[in-house]
Amino acid sequence: MWARIHNGAVAELTDIDPKGRFHPSIKWESADASVSIGYFFDGNVYNKPEVPLADLVVEKLTELEQALSSALDIGMPYIMTDGTEEVVQTRPEDEPNLLGLAIEARDLRDAGETSAVQQLRVKSNKVYELTPLEMIEVTDAAKLHKKQLLGQSWALKDQVRGIVADEALTDEEKRAAIEEINW
Image (tube, rainbow, N blue to C red; front, side, top):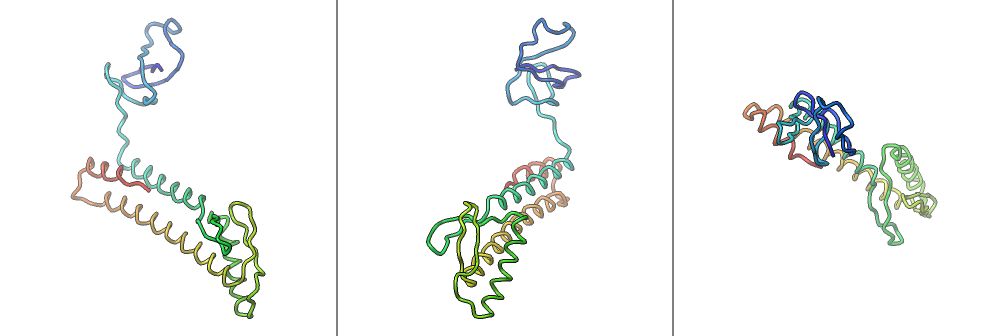
């Protein structure tokens, strides 16, 4: 890979050897795959540009939000009444369905229903017939699963904000501490 250097920074990358294809005043240097546009080049070494602390905070909070979304998209592992390990979907668009099933299950339980009269479709697309009590158990577990994921997300975001607010830390220490936070 080659990098076009302009004012000491990578302005363009190409996989095609630029030799003889451009005016000699355009400076191209060999680069490896880790180099990106915006990296600095001192004539020997490429250096990643330092992101301003405020931008790093936004990037980290966005990364944590995306990790929460991914965890919710994965769903909740759950052992069904027949012993099959399934995944109950917990995406935001699944929440109204789970809430409706939970409300209906409580109404049916309160009316004395004990038969498998409710259906739950899981991530594998299999439909399970559940009793109201079984439905209450699975929807309560899904609610707890989401609550735990949200708690993890909030705790990590609060950790980022706490680091930023810590006046005893230098910007370099804040940067290092923020970069260490991972889902």
